[in-house]
Image (cartoon, rainbow, N blue to C red; front, side, top):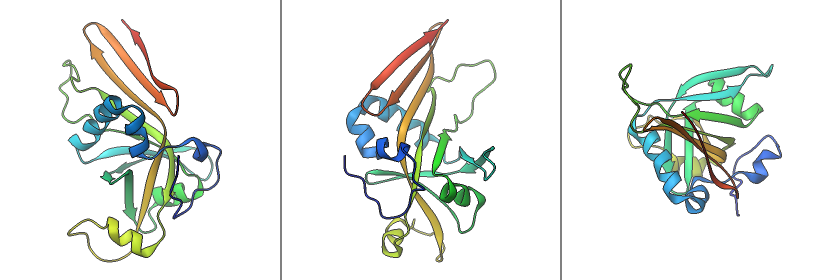
Length: 175
């Protein structure tokens, strides 16, 4: 597994086991596609980071798929960016979209977590700039995955599928 390291990860052992989106999708393509569909269905999701004191922080965010990468951007100096610069661990919970109380979430629920690598090379950053995005500095992080979870209701069962690098997808269910 080759990882591009343009940028920085505040060294955690976790970073050594983390995969790019492309590597994750190559390992478990059908599972990765289910999770990708949840993230592209709506633009806004929930990011969890760690504050300086170790307490969790949740922030609204958008993610994007760029080539082999799942990425996250933010305004310069945003607290979520500062959190990730200090401690690269993250979790992103996909927005389920409009769900009516009492009705099933037919498309399931997706979460990914891992480590965020900040892209710091100015030329590389420009390659990620979205059309119409205002000029000026911004933070961009590649999200390297250490686990992914997809939860769905199938018949009368709650089915939880989990993935970790090299371990494939495991499934547990409850009634």
